[in-house]
Image (cartoon, rainbow, N blue to C red; front, side, top):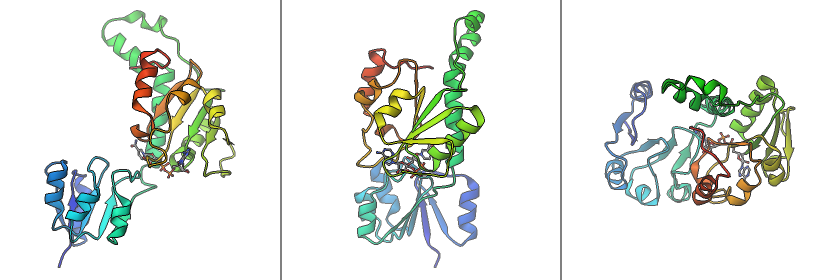
Amino acid sequence: MSHLVYIPQDIEKEGKRYLVEKGYKVKVGSDLSQKIIMEEIKDCDAVLTRSTAVINKEVITAAENLKVIAKYGVGLDNIDIEAATERGIYVTNTPEANANSVAEHVMALILSLSKNLSLADKELRSGNFAIRNQLFGMDLEGKTLGIIGLGRIGRILAKKASKGFDMKVIGYDPYVTACTNSELEIATDLEWVFRNSDVISLHLPLTKTTKGIIGCRELSWMKPSSYFVNASRGGVVKEADLVNALQAGRLLVLE
Ligand SMILES: NC(=O)c1ccc[n+]([C@@H]2O[C@H](COP(=O)([O-])OP(=O)(O)OC[C@H]3O[C@@H](n4cnc5c(N)ncnc54)[C@H](O)[C@@H]3O)[C@@H](O)[C@H]2O)c1
């Protein structure tokens, strides 16, 4: 009997073809509401989920045949691991698959911020040819990148920023005291990292411990000229504090 894999949010055809070639049946979801997911998962043996579909306790309870919850990505914050474990359901993820892509993406964001790319492009396209004399970019060479979370993505980013852009890289991670990245200085004081960085980049998992871990206190430690990048999860930053910092002009949005 072939097992049924539920994919609440569609994936590339190559992935679905792979499953079919291996003998699985595939069911692609029609909607990401909890009600529909609970209905559609009922007869499935496995679920292959991205970040948006929430696989919480109610969903897991509704999935009577479920044996595996496979995350098509890294962060497991949309899956109730405890509820899965109670039922003996395996939870898997793909930790190496996109780490380099995220680190490259973050370098793109840092370059875009430091060179005002997005704003300059918008202004030029609207006819403001004088924009080249109105914006001042920042060179990354010699500047300090502060990385919060020194896991797979954080460490790849450290290498790219240091070896590719001659940045000084400092980092904070309570669970990492040493690593093989010789270019990376590991600090034990989060405040020191925030105060001494020209760019702060967050690479934290969203867990009960890290939810809202960055708030007005941490944002107030930033130099007025520094940049803030979060390509991990929005929930690690207290949204209201971020809004306050933006409204108070302590942080500016560069479009
Ligand atoms: N934007 C995207 O497309 C995208 C893609 C992949 C991953 N992510 C997110 O990025 C996160 C990090 O990915 P990763 O592969 O580097 O994960 P990882 O598990 O390798 O690294 C996370 C690091 O954060 C550290 N950490 C935990 N709590 C901390 C704290 N309080 N302060 C500082 N550090 C702390 C851990 O010790 C670990 O070293 C994922 O959990 C996911 O949410 C986003």
